[in-house]
Image 1 (spheres, rainbow, N blue to C red):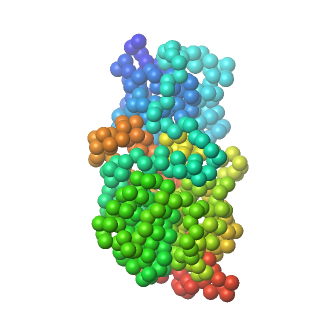
Image 2 (cartoon, helix red, strand yellow; image 1 turned 90 degrees about the vertical axis):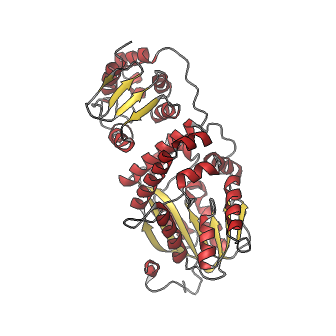
Image 3 (tube, rainbow, N blue to C red; image 1 turned 120 degrees about the horizontal axis):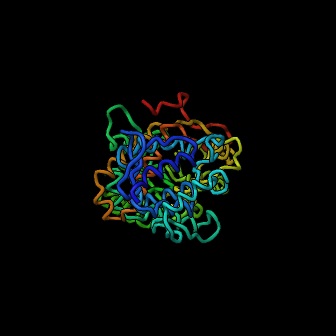
Length: 436
């Protein structure tokens, strides 16, 4: 076979009903497609079998994670070009009338000949085994404490050394707060300080950090604002790392790290609670419970800073489904909600929402910084985890950066108060004085 690339390009364009915006290079050394465009490299025909057995995004991602396809050229440009065909395609567009055409093509008599040629290109064989980096078996009720712990472990317990390479010295795994010319480290420090100022932290205040990660928020708050902080996480590896950092800074008398679910915390009241990049794991069915739990842990007048990724509202919210790639490889059981729903549920739980700030563009910059770190330390990242895991992180961070840039998703800081019955919130009249 010495014509795989031209055949595959013609088939893809027939199935998608649109010209391919990238070149294709196949395992036989042939190429086809627009000259000068980024190249999608199909290294093994097994990649096509994955798409035949699992049409759609999941089959494509499995081929990427397994190293059976690659990109020769700028990753962001390539994903941007493909987004319009695969992930952002209009339901009415193209012959296949869908996001990826193979499934529809196999049901459409007019396209069966093209599908048959695709089968001949893919070659015979049983469904390829999914890459080991994929999380498939899940036990227990969705968002039960046991299942949430397993999901968190899948994402975060992949090695602290790996995360050091990706996140940098700050070890902050959430959106940074950028200024023109700032570095990733400076932007992450600015974000932590912004949270502290929004919470109005002061000497000896009690702070609860829900989903504390590697301890960066509690360390910053204790060191710079003199608080007494408790950080909780479901990741044993994160807790070990955070405790070591706290000991090295001599703050063990002020900061405690627990491996604990937020639903089991019962040592309130706290003066303030920060939840930074954690609420995406809660799930829509549990979100009101989450909000009520945090409300109950705050003293009257206490503040919550909820920093959370949000998606755009849909005309039919019941049609929302979690992205297959994210659910299987990145954040199992994670769910995104529109910011309006988040605000409504916080208020239903008893909070008074005082401020909402969008940091959408800031997250795009942050993700590009993480991708740059990963590429710089690629050999180490592969050695510390696996080639497949490193490819998962590179794809998800680059694709997420584009999603923020294209306004497909956003991230918002919601400041809420457990306002006493007297109505005295304790907030300044000029609410955003924390920017000074």
